[in-house]
Image (cartoon, rainbow, N blue to C red; front, side, top):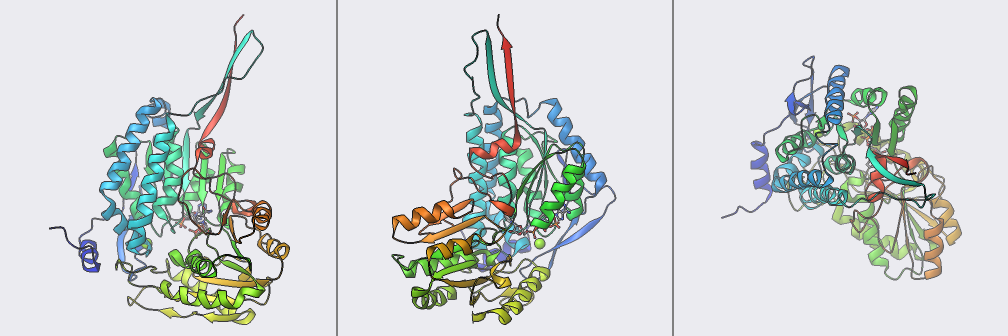
Length: 498
Ligand code: NAP
Ligand code: MG
């Protein structure tokens, strides 16, 4: 009889879960060369989970050399696309077969609720890997019309050695958004997970080997920001694909410029505006969606709907419904399948969010929340928090908080809403709720954001849509066939035929 996957099941499983903390370089698990380690802790209860290899320059050099060797040897880069596809599909099947284990690792290391890691993070990761595997043997080059004595092609070739530096908020998913297209295209990859969440990336490396990814083609380098820095400065890394903060993104771009001009792709922060017009057809739905947009994953989402812009005539009914909807997002024990939200990633982030809440108390009206909670004991948990700002000038209305804090901003006209939405340095996502086609058309054209939702927020998990930002939210796009361009060079080949 299969056991009910309740909280007791996950706690039992957690007690005996094997945790691999060594780096994965050239097809095997290894300690850092100098033997250094650091502890990864669980945000669930602040307990130490495992000692993890603290990689440094020597380990980066070793891994880059292994990646380069494997690339030059052609063991992956020169395989037929359908052969790479078969291996990646096998890897995806192994991830699927290990869903419980990987979701549990992710929940323990990140504090995200198990319902999310089982229901979203793992399926999203597997879908991404399958999608790029399925794409890669259907990519065609071009044969331009040329002078009759010539024949030419335009083809895409892998870059070589690709470094992926990723954050802690969706550790496996953000990693897959980089490594899936990079590997599918034939590159060799160095993955640097956040020091806060290294365990799932390390575990999937063994599954990659089992699936048939050759040694040196997929490497995982745990450690702190210094590992990312070394990768960004390395003369033999061809590309660095990064998801994280703007401050680190800038350093990476500078380091790339100071070294070998490696390609730099940045997916950075956001302060996304969710605009509710008075002619919105369903205020209740808009309010429920607005709560999910900011409180899911404890607000630790780059595309979170952290600014709710509401046309003044509907602010009262909207706030009434919003306060009710917010009650569903109080954190619970992350290993309880009924929990909708879990822990904040660590004390540093917790204090940062609390400082913003303090700032908010001076510049806006606190409508709900603001307090720390302790559903587990140790561990950092926060009430979902809502402020009503008098206008759009407040700091909390412009800076990325990356926590469960929503700022509601009233407006009078569509022009004003669009101006407020576009006033920050970010441009990752936006949404508009309206039943008027003209309003929708104007808003979707004028909102300066990489993704714009209409009458929904953060919906449609579909790899066909590129994801990324305008302005200081980054450059390039993850997902969709467009992402292949980040990991390939275009080559023009021209033959003189007579
Ligand atoms: P972060 O501090 O910038 O860290 C991101 C990654 O960079 C981590 O692996 C980090 O390692 C590494 N790193 C730190 N210093 C580095 C350096 N000098 N050079 C190279 N790499 C370095 O960001 P975070 O706090 O983890 O994540 C939150 C931010 O990510 C938010 O701004 C959020 O909006 C953004 N984000 C964006 C997207 C998107 O798709 N646009 C998605 C998710 C998150 P350590 O963690 O080990 O220090
Ligand atoms: Mg951790």
